[in-house]
Image (cartoon, rainbow, N blue to C red; front, side, top):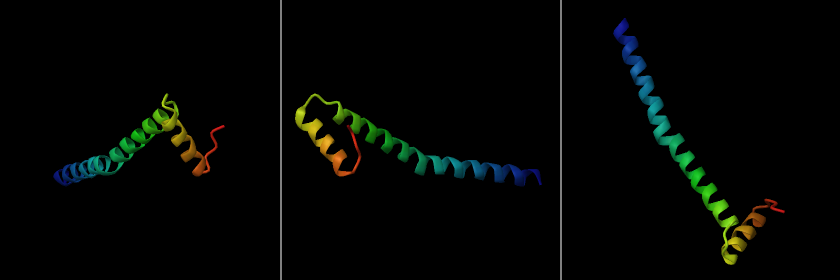
Length: 65
């Protein structure tokens, strides 16, 4: 009986690790990259890059001022 619980616990932790590796981590990395790109473009010194980010925020109905 005790070996069954040990095997079941190990399988459960492996599925949680797989979920984290396959679903959560890519979501967090993509979100982080998106934030870096958004704020990098919003505070950029280059006028064209800043205006492109500004216009895309307005086209998405996101107020910025």
